[in-house]
Image (cartoon, rainbow, N blue to C red; front, side, top):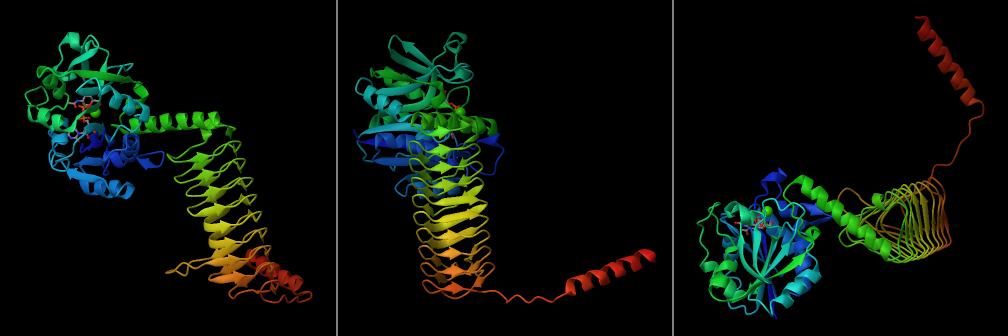
Length: 449
Ligand code: UD1
Ligand code: CA
């Protein structure tokens, strides 16, 4: 069945106390709405429509950046969830298939749950995702008639008996797209909130003799973000799950609770991750690699047998081949480091290629930026870069070449050559002793005054 995904994201999110639209706050390095889009992707939707409102321009830019094929419609005034869905009508005109409604602030709906809803659609005209929260609070209540869903009542409009129901509405609803819009046309706003409730479509469908059903999911999946505290809870829930998955997949985490993953982190089996490691977006670590304590990785790829850290920083475009060593206080950005190369201490390698088995001495810096442009540094295989070498890019160090410690290298070094780019040392016999004598005398004179 072709599916249209509708994601509601017009709400202000007042309780976030933020200038940023709520759905652009991030969990695991990705905006909330990206998580909702990823969840919906399980249904391979033919169309995705985002309903934006507060901060619509920022939301539009962000979602188009994630997926340029989504449509964004703007709900000028937030008159309720049915009114929000109604805004997608023009974009979905002529679409035949199912529509499924998700919330942009609810990041953890599992693909399996949406698949179960799609399946349940074979039996019911409208399918609602329900859950049984520990504290039902002010959620809408699902009023059942046997196995079928009779109606949804919002908490504000519920009788005490209805309020006592423990089964709640997550907000996720699936129905035939044309039927959805027909039912929405019939939704009014004569209720406690004065809003057009999407939840009313269940009663309206039932009144037409159509059947409604539910799929029940775990409360963890329906965790919605309304405040910074919720955001922190969502992050914690994500991390707890990511850590458990990593362990299950054969990754060693010495202190799991101190390791932070991004939404897309991939770590191979038998990788070893020491405490206090942070993964930003876009990192893959291959099997058997070793990430030592206090390292920060983002947009990087670490191959088999490589050792990173402690205290290393891999920035976007860092590509470490097999058996590479990147040690303490080393930053690597946009650089391909070939097999077995070593950058063990206190270095910055940016916009560079480092050849196989090259050895980069402590304190080496690729001077890649002239204040306007970035330039490339090429270091040949088996080259030896002496400690404290400044490599002023663009520059090429040949294969098997050497640079003397403390050199400032401004021109290419041929293969096998030694480059000395520093002032010649000049020793003045006895001069230090004389200087000390003079300075100490001066100090004594000042004290005397
Ligand atoms: C809604 C449900 C309730 C359910 C709860 C689950 C309705 C009427 N009620 O209540 O049954 O238990 O979610 O969290 O649907 N939005 C818009 N435009 C609007 C109104 C809302 O885009 O005009 C978006 C919000 O940004 C949010 C989502 O829809 O992402 C839900 O809106 P919210 O106001 O939080 O609904 P609740 O009152 O919590
Ligand atoms: Ca809500």
